Length: 463
Image 1: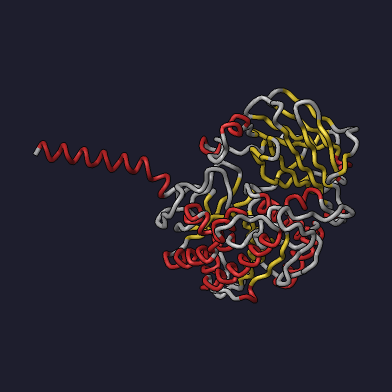
Image 2: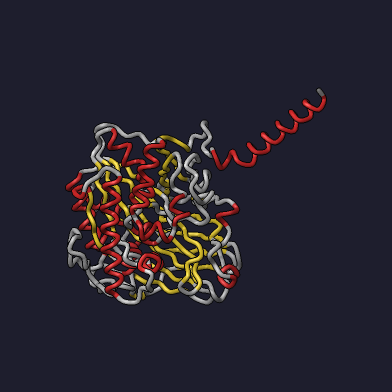
């Protein structure tokens, strides 16, 4: 009897330990957590999915598409790029290295067909998709530097400066910000969505971040109010655990990050259909199976930051990342890990007709570290393409201010530095005396980005 009681106590202890260790991974959504809500689709909805690359539609919204189709809700997918920059996936798929522009364009055509195969697996048809054909891994550069009189962006691998694909919406459109916005606005006008699911402003892939901004400002320019549901695909040390765990929840990187997260539950049938869609992207699945498998869970998640009220009071907009997400990415080499500097905190306010941005760093500022700050104003009475695009580069010894690529006078700008803190003051007139401000920042060493701050939307108090 005593032995049975002893074994019973041991068994209970094991069960409790297992629950303690694994319950947060298996079921991270806490029912009474007010930040976890359900995505609600109505029969009157029209769903527009903005996918930076072929495969994002399946990875982030494969379950959503099933849910919408079951309700008879129209769905349309827009692909920003043809995915022609993924050198590794081409090498794995073709068993030869990618060395020429023609090979990059070949990859774009392969991924175009994979996308068509995937959307058919998901229940859509070719008429339900639009390809834009802008440069893979180049749309953030377009956002930063290629507007107005500036020359079009030149693709790193394709060497193209205009949309090269005959199946795109606007073949021959120059690689410029105006072209992307024109195409996005055309699709929105034609489809008339009620909900838009778009890549996240805190995603770590530059095309994903850029697509959020292009979509947002296109809606502003059109005067359209549409519900926006951003989705994450690329984030440091996420999702966890990596691999195929179809009975697990997909949990957000953090609850305490200022994002109101929403989930869309997936049935096992929808999850398997989504899995078929993902595997249709053969070039991507063969080269990154474990990561893509990680999105086959019991749910999908969507969430956006609230707008930042910009007034005389300092607003803390720091992200509360967990210990895993604060660490350097595992793919960094030792030298890159040694150089890793994270932005631990950021805040913003308006003071004497200047935007004041403050950044606190995890490590002292070093010779190898640069900080880039991006500040773009928006006015209701002026097209975004004609507004200044202020880019500030700060290093240990000095700083430079650009409008797109053009250096401009630093008069009236202020940058104050301590070893671990930077405060930047930007005259509102230099960003067009805006009604809203889009701003972001990153740390880097050489060409390598170390840490990224999400794009945030600041609303000026003009009362």
